[in-house]
Length: 50
Image (cartoon, rainbow, N blue to C red; front, top):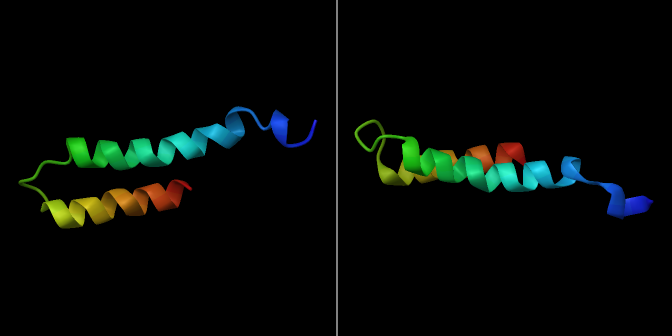
């Protein structure tokens, strides 16, 4: 039935990308990496999933 039958295969990456970015921001210790590069790492992970 066309585009309406995409189901979880369509929504999983769309939700996993932002979630992965958020997880990188929350659980990567600041002592390990500064905030700006940590944001770039999170966004890179987001783009890789998408």
